[in-house]
Length: 176
Image (cartoon, rainbow, N blue to C red):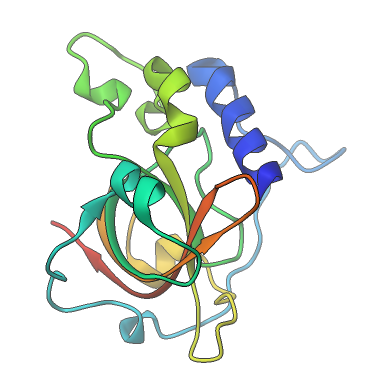
């Protein structure tokens, strides 16, 4: 998990100017084929009550706690885990570049104007199946979400030794 935060911090510091990464030697964008999984069983039809922001859950949740957390998908140039139902979310108090008048950043979900605040305002969300295993499907397709989508996630908190927060999601509500 320390690696996740370090990667997030590095990606956030890179900011808006980087091009997508490519497969070694091919010049083609990285992509992983997504397995065909029915996402409807992970999508909540009603917004869970008493959702808390990312910062609040990071400060108060212990390992194994049931949590309901809300945030926007982002926090780096690529907030997705390729081929898996996992992504990072950012606390609603932080401004994406698109929330700043006159900022024309092509990837506003990287929060490059809020880089210093990201380490304490992000969480990793992993959509897990009934056995607690990470769903092997592209999160964008599985949940019909994109960068800067606001989600409310219901699941269990998982903490590492560095205090990083991962939410093992049993359900996701996508705000319109």
